[in-house]
Image 1 (cartoon, helix red, strand yellow):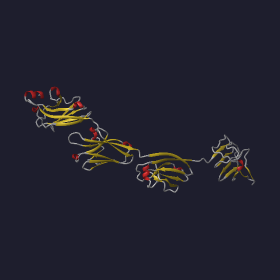
Image 2: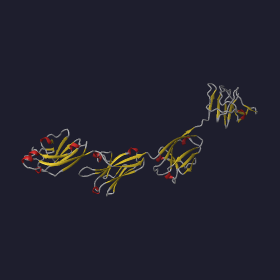
Image 3: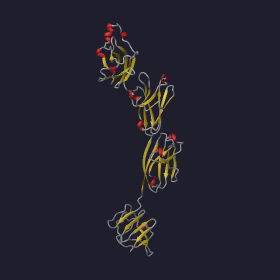
Image 4: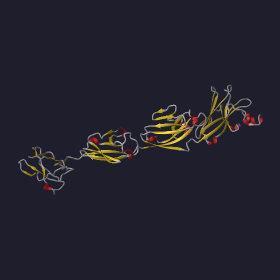
Length: 425
C-alpha cells in the first residue's frame, strides 16, 4: 500500500495527485455517539483491500483495514454487492473532527475519497420555547422550519438528544395520527403537533425535528409544563344524618355567567349532576360563589362532590369536597349486671301515669329514671316480667337532678319520644 506522502514526493508535487472517486464526503456526528463513513468504489475492485486513514494518510495514519475488520474504536465492513465500504467510528469526541480518506489498495497508486468529519454536542437547543397546559386538557406545539424543507420529513420526540430523536419520535409526518398525538403541516413554514388528554407525565422537553438528506437534522426545542387541573382546592366536611348540610362553592370570575351545578363522583369528568334532585337546592351567594344545601342528609350522600361552573371543565379555580356522614346516637343501654353506662343520659326525671291511673312520679326501686334524647333502656335481672305501655310527659320540676346516674331496677323500662314500655311486677 502506497502512502499519500510517498505519492506526493515521488509522483506529483501537489495534493492533486490524490484521486477522488466521488468528490468530498461530508460526515456529521454527535459527541459520545457513533458515526458511519461510507465510501463507494468502482466495479472491479471488490476483492481489493479497503481502509480508512486520517490526515495525510501516512503509514501511522491508517486507522483500520478490511483485513483487520475490528479495532476498539473502529470497525469496517465491505459490501461487495453494493460496492460500498463503511467504517464506523465509535464514541465520537471533538478531537475526532478533521479530514479522513477512504482508500482502495492497488498496484501503483491507491484510490482515495476525501471525507470531512464534523461533530456536535448531543444536546439542543440554545433557545427553548416554553409552553403550558393543564391536566386532561390539550396543547398544540408549534414547530417552525425554513421553506426549503417543505417536503422533508417532520417529527417530534421527547428528551434532549438529537442523535436518537428520529428513532424515538412520538409521531412523524408519515403517520400524522398516533394515539393522543396529531401532526399537521401547513407546507409553508410550520408544522404543529397537538397533544390531547394531557397528563402530568407529559411535562418535559420536546424536540421538533426536520430530517435532512445530507448533514444533521434541524431542531427546535419546546419545554412543556403540564399543571394539575387548575386549580383544585380540596375540602373535607361531615354532616349529621337526617339534618341539612350546606356546601360552599367558589368559582372563577370568568365563569360568572355560566350555569352552576354540583356533581358527585370520584372523577370530575365522570360525575353526576345532583342539583336536579329535590333534596339539593342551589343558592347564588355572590358574584364568585354559590352554595348547595342538602336537606335531610342520607347515608348514601357521602362521597366526593365537585362544584361546577363550566360544562366543558376548562381550567379555573374549582373545589372538590369530600363529604362524610355522622350518625346521631339514638339508643343507650344500661345493664344491671355489670352496669354499662349510656353515652347520652338526659338531665330530666320522667313522670307519667301509673297503672292505677294516678298521675305521679315514677320510681323503680329507689332509683330515678332520667330521660334520654331518644331512649333509655334498662334490662332487668328478673326472669319474668309484665309489659305495659305508658306514655310519659316531662316534669320541669327536676332541673337540679344530676346529668348522669347509675341505677338498678326490678323491671324493664323503655322510654321514647313516641312510646314507653314498662315491665312491672
